[in-house]
Image (cartoon, rainbow, N blue to C red; front, top):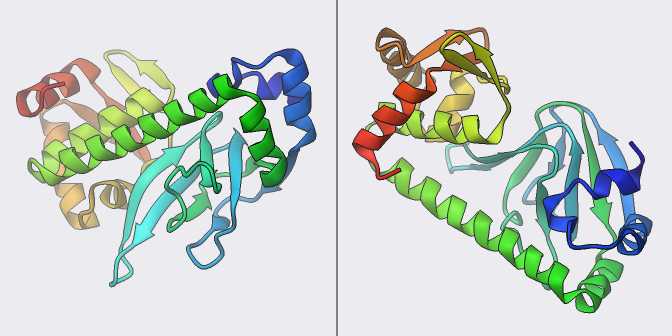
Length: 231
């Protein structure tokens, strides 16, 4: 797929004409970044708007004790970064590749001029920002309430919506490698506590587990979530 075809796949860019996409392509550079490589730390932050062309990246924070808390996992088509005109809330985050990635970087000055000339596209950018803020607020609310098992159920549902599911009988595989430690990073708990909670969910036949793999019974998972939250 050439870069013009690729850019056209972003929901954010659907309002652009083929001519606009060509102009967008001219201000884009693509870099291949190896697995487990920092794209950014709070100390190395630089202004710019990034698109994930291929692969997955993890956004997280560290507390004073060095404990990680994963805020989001982005995949193909997602956007992150900071500009003078628009902030997607990633300035103070660690951003690391989960697998080898192709990352597009927009030229900041040219892109800001492009925004001024394309108000409909700017409105789409504002919608992306609004959705990100809403999603982060919802995540914070759900992780502040309920017990650990409830938090894990919410996070697994969120991941099942975000990543392609592969059917295995009544269960669906979340197409993203999930270790117990990664789930712990997502819910702000210890690995040992998460392991115990996952074992309970397995006993209840809500999930199945494998090596860095989670299979969910989506109907049971949704039923458990509705008993706790208004979903």
